[in-house]
Length: 120
Image (tube, rainbow, N blue to C red; front, side, top):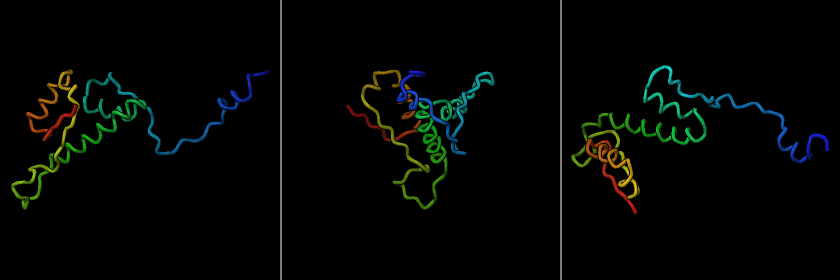
């Protein structure tokens, strides 16, 4: 058959449709502009599908950190957090024996997360 089976041709050769106006454009981090770690992490939102799946949680964590830096109202009692946000860290026990043990220690030591719990 000329041009291959019609089922295959019809499945592949489809007319393009217009993308929504708010569709993010794929853009990679420009390493030629120097290393900006915050901008690098932010760039994951528009790098590719897998990177954007990482970039979305990075964005949420940044929101939590910003909220944590806000001062709380003075009418809080002594049992209330002194920051605007408490970030809880949960992880599986295999992370302790991996290369992120020191990262978890740093976060806990500097009270960037609290309380943290592990599970098997």
